[in-house]
Amino acid sequence: MPYSATRLRQNLYAILDSVLENGQPVEIERKGRILRIVPEERPSIWERLEEHRVVTGDPEDLVSLDWSGSWSGVAEP
Image (cartoon, rainbow, N blue to C red; front, side):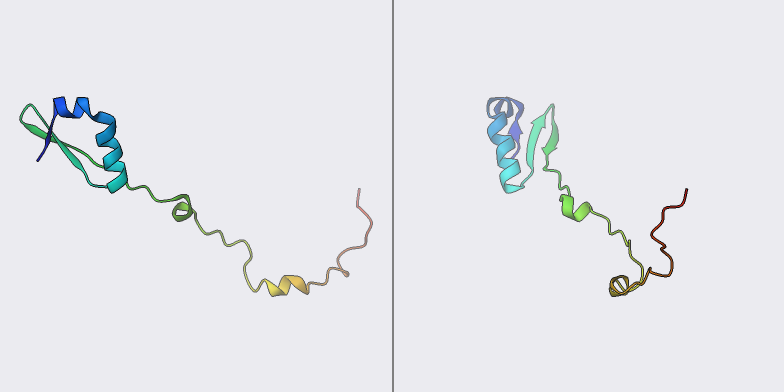
């Protein structure tokens, strides 16, 4: 059964808290029409993360890289 606008006004914060706690939408009747207060389902920060492939190939290959032939130890000007 929908709430009246007057009842919504009298209990606004309690009604909003109830919607957030149980996730159930609340219907309000105003001028013969029904309005709904519905909690927005937003994905968590972890669900919004995008995977970034930084290392292509086998990461174990990085452990055994030999740079001795490419590095002289002297900085070039």
